[in-house]
Image (cartoon, rainbow, N blue to C red):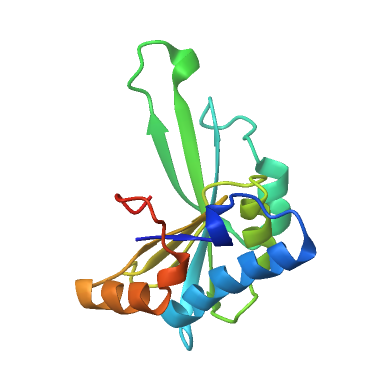
Length: 162
């Protein structure tokens, strides 16, 4: 399901009070999903070579210094090697505490960093923030409905829920 991070589906925060709303909404859902548990915090970067410099590399490293390389996913379907991409995922495990990923969330809200997610250690619940909101994947339809019903004001008014 998709939650918007600002009233009126506004995409980017511009004032300190809007940043506070964005972080509060992200953290409210994260608290509901992960309070009292350990989580994996995952960040990503990518490049056109499997070992070359990556986009977002410096910012990702600065904001997620404990992230260790977990996975490399290569997309080499295009016959032209210049269009091959290599996505690298970095992960760290930590106890969930409200605010422990605020710097990452703020960078995502500003569209300065992409491909961040927080998940339980069994990979059953995933919170994937993006500039403008967050996609949330839950373990059961009942859990999805409970979380959705607690935050109806944060849902899209679009018929498809986007």
